[in-house]
Amino acid sequence: MGLLSKKDSKLILDPLADDNPITIQVLGICSALAITAQLKPSIVMAISVVFVLSVGNVVISLMRNIIPSKIRIIVQLIVVATLVIIVDQVLKAFAYSLSKELSVFIGLIITNCIIMGRFEAFALANKPWRSFLDGIGNALGYGVILIIVGFFRELLGSGTLFGFKVLGDSVEKTGLYAFGYENNGFMVLPPMALIVVGIIIWVQRSRNKELIED
Amino acid sequence: MEHIELFFKSIFVDNMVFAYFLGMCSYLAVSKKVSTAVGLGAAVIFVLAITVPLNWLLDQYLLQEGALTWLGPEYADYDLGFLSFIMFIATIATMVQLVEIIVEKFSPSLYNSLGIFLPLIAVNCAILGGSLFMQSREIETLGLALNYGIGSGIGWFLAIVAIAAIREKIRYSNVPPALRGLGITFIITGLMAIGFMSFGGMLTGGEEEATEETVENNVGMVTNTDEETSSLAIETITDTDKN
Image 1: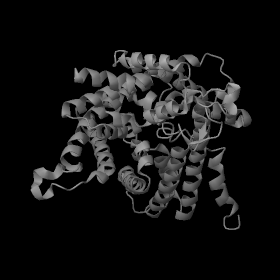
Image 2: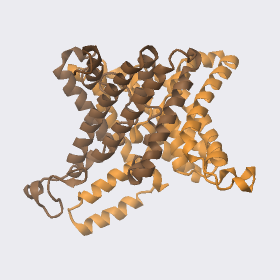
Image 3: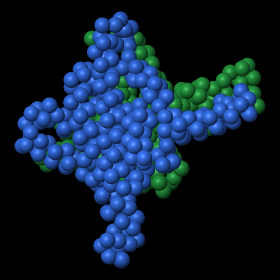
Image 4: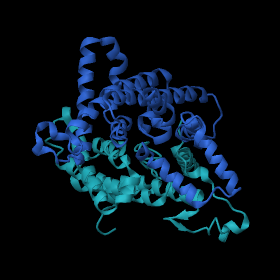
């Protein structure tokens, strides 16, 4: 970390685990869960949020001294909406089927609480470079959870990763299926996303007792 | 009939929280007490009932391809669809502000119960989600749009009141320490979502299930093929396209 001072690298590393936006700050769950039935959309979503949050944080941070505090919410919403439109148009142009699959959830990045939360809590009070790092860190923390959930749901639910049949063929009974293994079709349904995140929170809090509530 | 079907579908089958995880942030943050949950839920119904029809009008007469024909024939092939995110969120933010001012002026008692929640709502995903689903499902008339707004609002209301009631009771239970608070709320919501999935057959009158069953019998026990599960996954995500 020659480029980053110790304080700066803390900005990136903290949200990855002990200050994770999803499991600790409880932000940005809205659009996170519905698209994690497979790994690929989860990763696309994570990259989109990294882009929107880091650029948005820099823009807000550059404007922090000229935004009147009374209308800051509207200003923030406009900045996010513009960035999300860019992401949406890029996806439509280069990955149309994926953008169909993600449907309205790309649009819902606008109201993703992580974004507004970081604007309010960090970008409005800090310099652009630090805000940029904070944006990257938090978006990565969000992405990590998305990817973990997507990994388990696709692996256990469909027996595939990125669409590749890693556990063998379930129809021809090769690989694990030869031993009578069955896919858990339940994992791809919406409720299991909540339960998987619940379990991630459980594991994380048992490892780090300081995070336990009450 | 169309109205009744859409109404119940948006409350139970396409429930905002359990089927699409919309508005989860405020759902988790404001569900510690039933009374505040009722306040926020009512505010969501109110705002959805206003913004969905309003955004429907915007979509029909401004954003869709060919929507600008009322300005003159030369505008017929304009497609401003890419602006919908920014238009919708601007409408929502201003409407929320406007509703807050009006309610404060004319009904201070309602303002006292709803008022503190209104600013929270501008960035609630359920509100923007309502408008975006309305757009992607191509709802046909203004009446249906209003119906959809109210229906999905009621669905959200039911969800948050139910979880708040459960959380009030669960305080007396002995939950594993690491699961206390957020963790158990997630898992309970998951279980509730499983319960709500059983409403899925409500509107098909069981016909869809019946045909599926006969197919299953023909194929035998091999039902959980890759194709089926992955198509199921895509179906839950892009359910919007079907309507």
